[in-house]
Image (cartoon, rainbow, N blue to C red):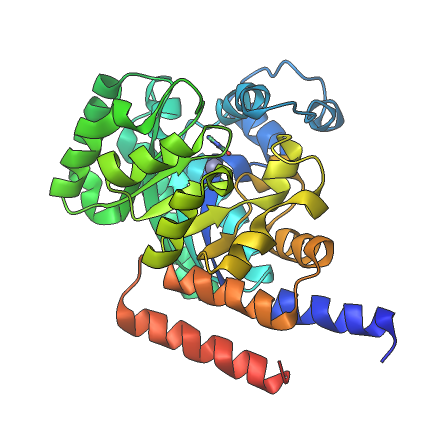
Length: 345
Ligand code: HPA
Ligand code: ZN
């Protein structure tokens, strides 16, 4: 085989891997075309004259510069059908990338503070989940994220508003502006969510220091860390992540767009994978960061020179880290092993 055909074969293998996506903000899957369509449907005037002008504004320098435009984009979502259309568009893209299970973050406070009811958001997303299951065979869960730039009381009120819908939610998370809003600010609301039987995750160590990863683990008692790439600066923390198989939901293209790393070739995902950290690949906000799952997988495999076995390990890690039953996990792992055996990897 020539180098080019070997490369093409590896890319094909990576694209076809059955995989789980565990770090996708559903509002971050809103493509500019759909933003404009929903704005028109809802009689909202956007501050950008065209799809191209909006897309041209997607040049970010850090997390906050992205969040400002991301919250503006989400302001076109009003009716249950809008949430359904957004989620269904994501599920179709995910299915095309062989995502068989997805855990979707959603930010209710972005909507409830504009007068959209919690039920409108959750019912729209839940209807899309049902259709994705029956039509595409994609299974999914919902994770309610608290916005960390708002108060803990606001998060407690949000959890209370979600009480009638808890059977539709698998867990809670923590997102938005990280630096200056450490995990411990949300100790009480996470304890409450835990009492209610919800699974716990939090963004930590995207831009914030390793100390935020420690407090997400020890104070919030999370079961996965979202991003977590700054953990590499603390050998004791890395040791803990390895020995406990604590998953990190890493988002390589997001990290480049938000300037966490300058080039993908400088990303620490391969180092952490080889140390035995349970790292996974995810798209974060694919409409804003230039790629869905397979674009993240292929770009990372190429930039970091990952082998087919390492790509398969990343897919296996995604099922290990999923909030699913042992039976579901065994089913996905069998499917993954079957797939790679057929391709001789
Ligand atoms: N980090 C923090 N908050 C977010 C992100 C992110 O990458 N995407 C959407 N909200
Ligand atoms: Zn995120």
